[in-house]
Structure formats: C-alpha cells, structure tokens
Length: 127
Image (cartoon, rainbow, N blue to C red; front, side, top):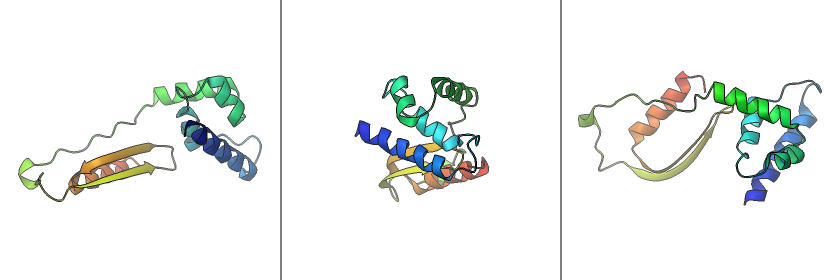
C-alpha cells in the first residue's frame, strides 16, 4: 500500500508535467500537498527522486505549509436541543480534496447537521 501511494503521486506529477503550459509553470498547490503527504512515510531523498523534484523545493513547500497551516476548520456551535444525537447518524467515510490542495478525511458515525456545517465552513473559506 505504501509503495502504491508513491506511485500514484508520481503518476500525478508526470501527468501534470505533460499537460502544463510551460516548463516554468509553478507546481500546483494540490501536488505540493500530495508530495508533502509522503514525508514521514518515505525518506525525503526517495520522494524527490520518485517525483523528480529537488530537495530545496520540497523544503520550501514544507515552509509554505507550516506558515499558512489553516487545515483546522472550526464548525459553528449548534443548539443541543435541536440535534437528536440518537438518530439520523450513519457510518461513512469521505475524503474531500479541493483544487487549492486542502484535504480532509472523515470517517465514522456523524450527524448530518455536522457534515452540513463542515461543508458550509469549507465553502465559506473558498475551498
């Protein structure tokens, strides 16, 4: 499974390189995010070699992300009397990925109201 993730992201980079408007086109945020998701699973030199990027770029992307780490989405409070926690919950597993590179994995049992609030909060942030 681990190798599969690296291969998928490698193919995404290759596909982008084939279709980008020019050789100097900046790497899209979603690809930067995908590359950074591999850090901790693989050695950085292996990531750079597989994705055909240099170590300096990867390090720069890490700094960008840490400066603007806005991955936490605050949901608005709900009135407890309006939410029936015993019904309408169903198990699910979803992954949200925006064009800006924001990713959110959600799994388990969740009330529809909370899912709606999450989607609304993401929408308000332009995600």
